[in-house]
Image (cartoon, rainbow over all chains, first blue to last red; front, side, top):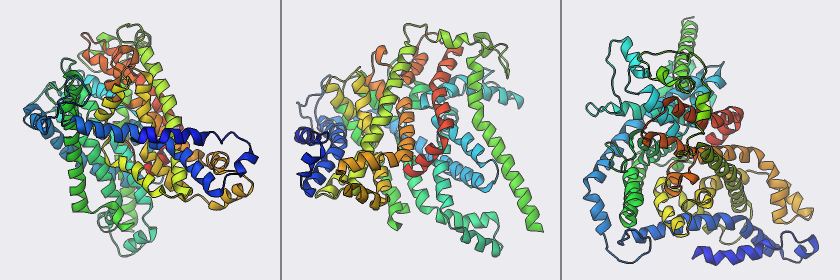
Length: 325
Length: 279
């Protein structure tokens, strides 16, 4: 194992550091180099080895074992855990939910953050203020934002902000989160994540925008190109690599959604039984409430598979951002 | 002429749109503070008021009175976690990033591949495997269980590595000639010269640690090891919700970071632009 193999090395390596100069000079150049490398890299390697590689390897084995109320490997059941999970309607519903959510939130956040970046980049005065205003929500946790959205902005009572604004147009007070048909809760979920994330992606787009050579714009303006034409033929194509990378980050972030769904929909009764839930919520319920670590692990790998598929598909369609560098 | 007028109109429209959007983005903060300072009847009143009738600061003090929701304890827990995670994870990443960029030893490429390889696995998906491992080592409801897995950030290693690759080699060579060891060069020359990177990634790491939810929810099952985010979410599952208190709690969970964000904004923006974001 990685862990036990490298520990003694690190201890040995740590000793010469406080020693004084004459002693150290006796090491050859190559030895001192190797020593420094090991001392600097070992902690990170050990940590990632234990908390990522060992964890994932163990969990992979658990996903083929019957592991109820235990995390020790034993009873081998082959693909049963995967089969059980995929035949569970509640899990399949959660997969549908996350695919829908991703299909909604990714394009909206993409267009929103690119639009904000272009606008903020265009103004000369007050740029720092606007950047701050849009980025500030990024400091807020999903849970805290969910509280504001659920209990203040989109609360079902007439004095909730959304209902107050609706009343100005003569609309009746609406229970936004509880309304399933039409599914008004999507408005709550999408606006919340948009508010939290759009500023972060905006910053990435601004960094991309500022890397575009200015002479391209000068040439375009000499040719009499308007703003829309300039955006289409210069800005957007030049942002291609940035866009591909940002889309990938957005997909991965959306497919792993948990916090705000939990904070908005959980009633505290039994996890995974909420009317609206994501795969991670379902798996959390399976693993921590039912204590079925075999099925839970199987789900973690199915979700990984989904994310890998999306990543590959996106790479296939758009080309990986790295190709051009 | 026409174009000049067009551009003036265009930039006026741009400002108008941006100002409107900025107001929309800041409104949730305002509503939060407003509600945190109101009384229960005011919050639940049938019609909207922009200002509370009086500033009810006792919402903030009563927050700490409920023994079933140890809010004060949860803030202390979150602070300990973030204060340890931010510097340690940043330092570890800087150490590894420097070695991988500057110390040429056999096998370096393989080590880099092992570290970068963890980036391919989606973060949320590793929580369950990590829970299995940390749980088997007795880490449930412990401080180390809450902290340890968050200390190892492969993404930050990659960022530090590319930062150190562009670091001028002459300075290091001068240090070597003066008799410093490789570790001496790192500690005396490299580390002090990475202050900006360390500040920006440290701030991002602090935010991540303070805001993280799923891992503390899994590992901190006992109220005594709750973090502030968990304590906040516990409002939703309790039988009776004291709304102004809930908003006061939310404000307490947000304000430290908002203040830090405003103070360290320039570094954080740099960090985000460099890192391509971590959440």
